[in-house]
Image (cartoon, rainbow, N blue to C red; front, side, top):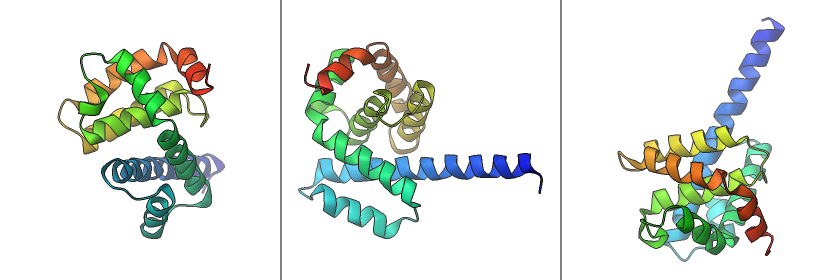
Length: 157
């Protein structure tokens, strides 16, 4: 196998693993949003059923822990950019895809904006309603345009 082929396969494996990790994040956030389970209990459940490498487990844990601890601030910020849709009234999947996408847009996970938005849109299309992808794309596009404000809010500023 050529070096280029090996690099492409490694890149595809990384993308596939990251996509699987994002699915695990969404499942964990959904469970947290609909039950009284602790973050640790939910993560243990996800990790016991999914084959994720250590890097992906760190990615999942970091996003879940931070999104869950900052959910009030994330919801307020998302609500500012989707005022016609109160966050509490959004479908559980849509709400958590938006939370996770907004968190990734902050740069905390070194995810490029386009990737964060595209991955969130794909999750919304896969797990949400027929129009969820367009909705998530629009809201996260607006959030991305004001990301410095979100970062300041999350820092407590």
